[in-house]
Length: 234
Ligand SMILES: NC(=O)c1ccc[n+]([C@@H]2O[C@H](COP(=O)([O-])OP(=O)(O)OC[C@H]3O[C@@H](n4cnc5c(N)ncnc54)[C@H](OP(=O)(O)O)[C@@H]3O)[C@@H](O)[C@H]2O)c1
Image (cartoon, rainbow, N blue to C red; front, side, top):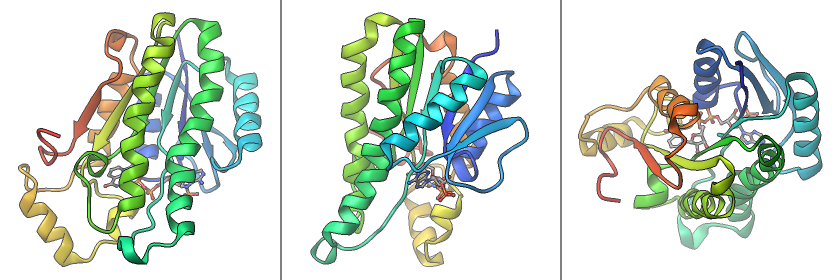
């Protein structure tokens, strides 16, 4: 049976690859996104994840068209890097509002449907830097670390109702987000990654389809690294 999968931010990058992977395996896939073109076979509703009413309205629209959501991949995220001493409240709060509170808004609405279905797969896109830290990313790493607590609290709250919640922790993946890095920084990062390369979006998508699968029903509260070994032991 085709399941309704919602991926936030499927217009580009990792979210796009995740949406495509769910489409390829026969799921009904939709996205909550801010604009841009969508992959073949992916329906969309416009919302900014920082706007609770817009998120709820987008879920309503998509569920009316495709049935209750069974899999949520909370992928939308931003960076606004800067050294701690120079980071403004606005730059800290903006990143937390999108990456953490935005994820919370989507999860809260999705769980409402999943409880009725007595089935749900929640996949949160975290980051290796949420576990290891990174200079210049106090805002970003804080927002991503918090997703681990979120997944584990959801697991304890609704784990008995057929709902799982897990975090994927990608390392450095080739997308627009990492394209902003200076070449010297890329070389420096590559040297520290045991796989000696950045990852591909399809490699993150493979982890998302696994954690979103019916077969992953006994995996919850886990953090699955997709980082070429960068974060081992964290
Ligand atoms: N690339 C990496 O190396 C890497 C590593 C670890 C974790 N991650 C995480 O993976 C996820 C995807 O990253 P990416 O590399 O694919 O980045 P990306 O290419 O910059 O894509 C980010 C996506 O999030 C959406 N988004 C941002 N703010 C939003 C908002 N307020 N409301 C709704 N959607 C919003 C963007 O929409 P617009 O197109 O409208 O901006 C876009 O679809 C993020 O959570 C990121 O933190 C990435």
